[in-house]
Image (cartoon, each protein chain N blue to C red):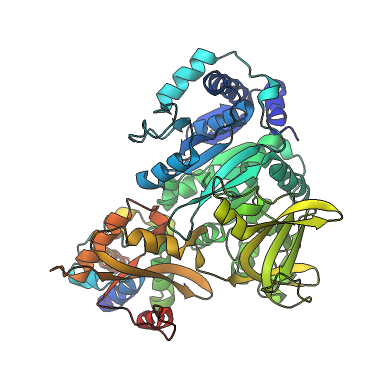
Length: 514
Length: 76
């Protein structure tokens, strides 16, 4: 599948069409093609064919997509990092990725020259534009484009040891996902549609809208984090968006549902809503069918390690009224999705166990981290062909061919669609000099995580109110982890109770907050 | 009514500090974010029957406990 070739085709045949609309700007398919060609030529000039990853740091600027396509055209995997990542975490990623180029689209003030191996930090949009101007008209040779077994992108997810893990997705993974997903989500006249582009580029759910829209020659309508923090602005942009296809986490949609104006009058063109990243509840689906006429709803499931989604279900009204929890659907055709017991043996239909994915969508492993890869990835055979497998750590069961999700088997949680290892926050809390030990727990309501609580013991007595210490801890923690990983509540303890195994009694702590 | 609002806010923010310092900026102090605002509006609706549409307010309207109380009182 020639993804960039398919996108470029629109730049040649339908160049004036908007590929992206963002606030008062638009990026046409012609501009997207020419600018990404120019930037790719620059990357090739600098790095040749070495296939090292390139870091793209920013939020939702149009240039993010130009940089991403330029990486693919020049044969380099891209690492998209959203601005919700603090400097310290960006630093860890840049260091472990051994990237030689960093496009700082956001223009954040970093001092990373020492880390980027070639010292090629392109510090802001003006510098990126200057490079593009300089190389405009140059076209990278087709032979440079990312190949089937090459890494297409690397996404960093929360790791239980406090260091993020880079999930490598190859072009063959992308093909496996896109061929299936385009087929199950097909609508009439794809090229005339508008896709909502809201999900952070650091989160692979965004791959669904970006690539399907660009491959189809449709338009992406961008929603940024500033709009989300101001509903008036958000709803204004919705009202001028003409969105046909909605892609988001259930949390984002539920936030919008609180406002009664979120209905067919606001989004009269809406034809389909696709949800992934979290549990989709029956009550939300029923509300959506009330607010919008004749929409299709797709509920998807997939870990970053198996490329966006590996199961999907069309949810209709009857299903939402009668099946609770909702299924996450039928598996993708290029993979086997099954349920295994703790020994790795497949269980009988209806029995609970770990969800295992085997097939072409499965990542080639964590970047530069064989130890972690060995723990979660394996190889097995389907019909005599060796395939990559991934143990998700998710609990589920299969009934009548449909997969159902039950929750995590470890200390990973989903909050507002973000995947968070509680151990990641705990490790980073312990980096704060006056903290002795830390335990982070999720607080749930109706089976959904609402917020996180951190319990900490201190190294020294601090003569301040607990609240003030808590605020200090939050501010310190912000240096190490993204905002969405900061616990809302901080409880200071004198000591932790231990259970019979000598481990901190998490259950007792849970009782503290109930 | 004031106490009820403060109870809800304490629940959402996870600290009783909001009762002690009613002029604390909830956003700057990290006590409220987009998700928290959503939770607050849902609780106000469910617990008190006060229905506020997110599009009706700006962050400025609800940035301190006092402002939230004032806003709800003004609506009647």
